Amino acid sequence: MKVDSVNRREFLQKSAVTVTVVSACLCGISGCAMYTGISETPAAEPDAVSFDGSILSVDLAAEPTLQQIGGAVKVRNADTPDGLIIARVAENEYAVASLLCTHRNVELEYDHSDARFRCPSLGSSVFTLDGVRESGMARRPLRSYQATLEAGSLKIRI
Image (tube, rainbow, N blue to C red; front, side, top):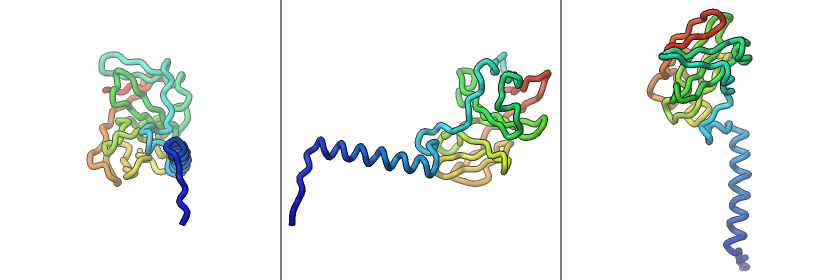
């Protein structure tokens, strides 16, 4: 029986390549958010978002993603430490909830075809648009926020 000897450097190089390939494959199969915690939901345009007291305003003319029904953006800044996910559900209807899944704090995504917020991570938690947990590993609901349209802006009470 022949035993190949591998030095430490070769072993580490081969291991690093293996880990990189496996991670890339898994990321392609199940989505990178499972590993990074960051969803594919685009960030809101910085110039479209302003904060005044307890009201977050989104200038809809400056946020192209929310100009389309089915579009969704995330807002993460000092005024919203846990972040928000904002989805355009219908012509004049928006849903706003906390961005992070209550299971593993992974950023949520909006599924327009099913009208649900979904966690792309392990456990695949699913929430209604008002934050109620429907399935998955999460045990707590999302925090939902009231949003109203006023003169081309979406006003969200934080």
